[in-house]
Length: 162
Image 1 (cartoon, rainbow, N blue to C red):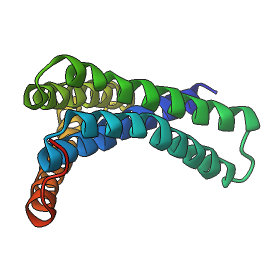
Image 2 (image 1 turned 180 degrees about the horizontal axis):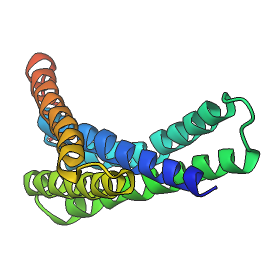
Image 3 (image 1 turned 60 degrees about the vertical axis):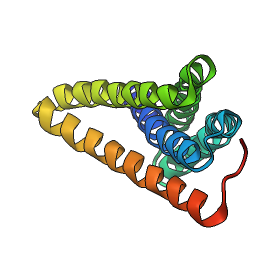
């Protein structure tokens, strides 16, 4: 059961950082609209958290001999960790100017991912710097790609919102 909880939390936190940062950065770059960014974060927190939880459940269910309790624990821990992490990105967006909120969100997301990666590496006896570097690099690539995607969409299709 402990492995199921760990699996769900680590998946939920990782997915929460990557998808929320990607959407947040892309929407801000494309629309410059606080409303669009808030709507995107709430959508990730609800729809994507539920989707990931169901995906985790079905993935574990597809394994032969899966324990039903472990299935539900993985799914529930995925849902809760992703939902609350995604919601945490709302705070900078609500209380700071949007551009500053994006930078604070990036720092927050990379910190969560770095800390999670550190604990994963330590539990596996791997060098933390290598694991942290790999995971943070992927997140940075997502942020860069979604930024330029948002800029491209804004340029090609016109700005949406204020």
